[in-house]
Image (cartoon, rainbow, N blue to C red; front, side, top):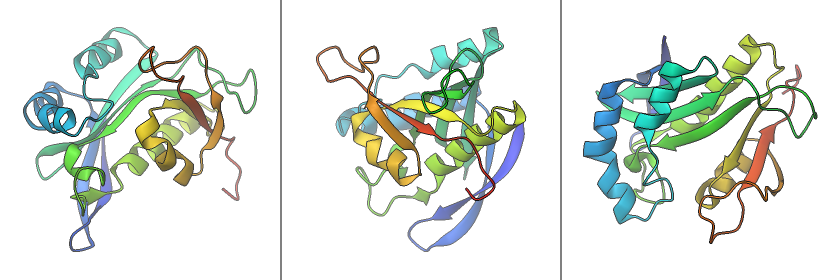
Length: 189
């Protein structure tokens, strides 16, 4: 899978072309060599996420898929989704695409770098999750459990906030994760 995407170079507000494609070994290498230390240094909650495991799930299981965004030869964002077996809280019983994990490169995070290098990476991944959802005829429903550091981002993307889910924790010593979901797609949305 390979899809051309557009991002915005934050410093000069110029559009740039990138690629959204299946997560490959090159992206895992970028995580280890370019992402891991800045994520640790800036105490990002996703610093220990195991993208190798997420990729292996997508290679072994039909219901798991993993994607990367590349631009200027570097991995700019990653997403892992489940396409079966998850159901909407907005419309109980209806299937959703569930985002297991979504991350942008450290240099694209305003909490680490201002201005960020590229803008639109996370939003592009969310839109692709909705596209996959529509391909599966799930009416645009996409859900996820958000890390505290990025809850506002998901609210700003138009996702509905639900109550914290007592079964979903990032760390057992932290409060439970909050669930977010896009409502069903309607022509005016």
